Amino acid sequence: MKRLVKLFSIFVILVFLLVSCNCEKPQEKVQPKEVKFEFGVASYSLRKFSAEKALAFTKKLGIENIAFKSFHLKLDAADGEIAEVVQMCKDAGVNLYAGGVIYMNTEAEVVQAFEYAQKAGMKVIVGVPKHELLPYVEQKVKDYNIKLAIHNHGPGDKLYPSAEIAYNLIKDMNARMGLCLDIGHTTRIGRDPSEDLVSFFGRVHDIHIKDVTAASHEGNTCEIGRGIIDIEKFLKTLLDMEYDGMVSFEYEKDGDNPFAGMAESVGYVRGMLKILKQN
Amino acid sequence: MKRLVKLFSIFVILVFLLVSCNCEKPQEKVQPKEVKFEFGVASYSLRKFSAEKALAFTKKLGIENIAFKSFHLKLDAADGEIAEVVQMCKDAGVNLYAGGVIYMNTEAEVVQAFEYAQKAGMKVIVGVPKHELLPYVEQKVKDYNIKLAIHNHGPGDKLYPSAEIAYNLIKDMNARMGLCLDIGHTTRIGRDPSEDLVSFFGRVHDIHIKDVTAASHEGNTCEIGRGIIDIEKFLKTLLDMEYDGMVSFEYEKDGDNPFAGMAESVGYVRGMLKILKQN
Image (cartoon, rainbow over all chains, first blue to last red; front, side, top):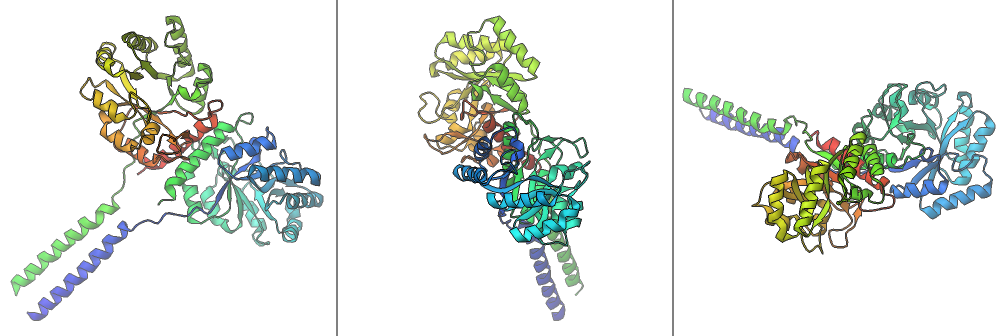
């Protein structure tokens, strides 16, 4: 009799431990996530406008980082020209963090790109070197301490249609050899940008964020949120992986008047991020 | 002895019922929320541009409803002019759902506003009638079956600084007598737009969505997401209350070039809403 009562009370205690540990988990308080990455603008979006205009619009968007395409700083610019444009960026309060997309088909073009980037104080070259030049480029990323971010261009691109192809060529090279993950072209070739971000994470040195109308060769860039890319999943992945690089808006559409489409895209991403970082 | 065993097994059953009902709730699957409202543009935002341009930009934003300010359709326009502008809206595929803000200081101005709205096929007059004209306006909302949405203008406004003041004047009148809740001016006068939406819900016939830099007389409109309004809370409230009217973007800033700021605001709201409607 006594033993049964003892057994009974032990059982009660055990069950209540079970209840408490089972029920508390779902009620755990979620910690706000820290956004470690920064937004930038890929100036190809503003290719029909001057460097001054590109910088002014970047500031208007509330963005403080820019990657210049050659339209805004010629690859063969004289030192004086480069210094002027760098000063223009400083005066505008915009960080010129990268140059590109820069194509490199000869060793001379590789040297030109790294000299250009060094003089402009760029940390990253968003580049497309011929495969056989990769070992030569690897030597340069060490010599100059400037990163290479290979840009994937999707279906039809001979050199780097997917980030995977680029990754497999550089994964055993110096860690400064990496990728500029273009989520539009990644989607156009039928891959999931969030999965590629995770798979190649250690080598993602820059990101081009955008949206596209179809996951195929025919897909075109459109305002972020109006296309088919799962932007919420991609932003969640950036937060979960604690990506701390640049996320640059590249908006190919409306070359003659890209301002509204770029601004809508920036707003969409900020609106989503405001909620995602809270939980 | 037997009784104790019986008691024991009953207890076990009870505890497990308790466990199951306590633990399942937090794991319930959330149903996606239906967005019953539509977006619109308050054409005051585009006051420096033609009606054609205002319609074209509204479409570019992916918005299909517009409320015309007198800049885009004069209050004293001849029937032919009105018919032309209405046709222009139809051709552009934009629904001209309202007119305003329209000030009404005399009975003649009230009649003009309702004739104007009727000829243009508007469902709502976003209006500011003198207090003593409200009973006369109430007669007209019945005669014309067109709603009045009184627009609150914030600190310094003599007639309707807050939605509360307007609500208290019309709450016992015909249900077509209502409010255009301007969340910017509501915030500037120190009220919570989400709380006002709930308090005056049955009479909210239109909404002006925007953001402001401060909850005071000095607060100015800015891009949505860059100001101090809790947009997430307001959108959640719209969904929870199943608001099924219009939510129109009114962007007073950058009168000479409001396009990027408006587009950023639209993108921000769409990005948040994409997540909020899922849970």
